[in-house]
Figure 1 (tube, helix red, strand yellow):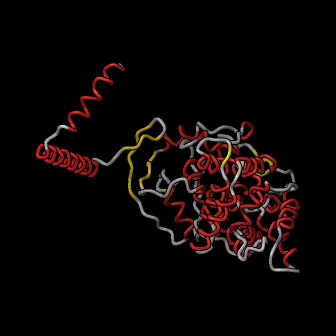
Figure 2 (spheres, rainbow, N blue to C red):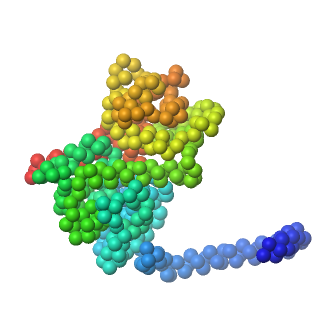
Figure 3 (tube, rainbow, N blue to C red):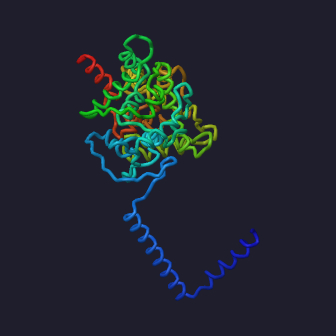
Length: 400
């Protein structure tokens, strides 16, 4: 095998180097014509015979659709939803993670149209809540269905604190047992969709319903199981982001960390370039690398936006900037631990507007809001998604 390769390589180079100019020109023209003809034939074939996708073990026909909602969050769901059942769009677990992490842009609207038989086979891959693992969505991949109301609900609770989640859960726990039943969970998710659109569709067959309440829907969801599910989902999303940055290694550089932060920063291109240059000049040792645990601790802190923002505002009462020591104290007040110094140094280099070694809070808080809202591609306002959902629930409860 190796002898044939060594024998063929010299012949290949000799043929190309000894080609006369006229023959070379003719050869290039022929190759170009063949490539153009092949591409044209492939394009026309796909128009006449629409491409078939392999969805799990089943071949299903694809179709094209356009986003119909005027709400940008719902429109984002429609762009990433790759499955259609009974006229309704669904995300797969992989679609959800890709949407949140920005691993891929929304492609042409080709959805896998499935019937009830295939839906049942897809949901058969769903594990019970007792066997929940950290990488649940990764392991399910495309073998799962997430409705629009569930997508909006997951976004709302992912961007809120555990305290707010506990309040919402208790509002639907009528007997104070620490558990809710399937109809109550459906009411929670549908109320979230009502906040974004006028109509909420009721779907009885999804991965979350199967995971939380078993196949027959007779199970109950405990608060501790649901908070563990949401915590694991946050960690899974952060792991997907980190693995894409680290290319499979155990750590990322401070420059990579700066790229992540600047991607969601609202500062001007000139300010971004200057901040990145300051980080590049400060990097000197391999010990400045950032592990997944440090990465996870930093962005978990950002999920507690309201508490962290309140802690920082206490230091802003006396001055307009924040020192590294005050920043670390605010982080410890929220999470119970200090952040990795390499991350804090990177943050201060990027958001130190006047170079005095202090943080400019306005630009940094704008970055946090933009990062939290990355799944919707719209920056959060002063009222977070969790607050929006809370106000919606309170309104509906008062009306009943």
